[in-house]
Image (cartoon, rainbow, N blue to C red):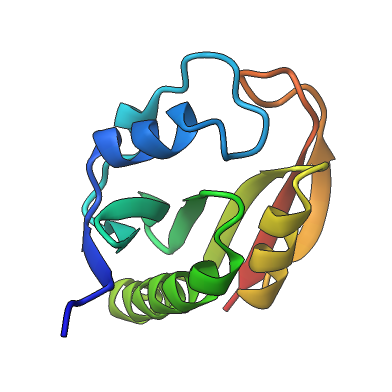
Length: 144
């Protein structure tokens, strides 16, 4: 039996592959995926293709930023992969003893907002013209 799903250490080329496929949010510019590479970052693959990338990087003691990039139209596979990445994030939070986890999610990215809330985050504020795309983003947080 072939293994359909696998999680590997994140590499910027994985995110680039998802973004260049045109199946994620509304990226039509160069996204600096090399900035996402950190100790605790992963990519979920289905049949050898990346469908979700995620990670958590420490900003300072006790505080970390979470990020996720998901390929669209993969709903039947995405839940399995997001569940596994969520488990990796939860393990990292415990190991690193974080007391605040935060994320920036575009206000029009419903799937991303839904995942952040599934992860236990709530809206803290709106950051106007925050991203490289000059769109508004929610600051979502989870206090532990």
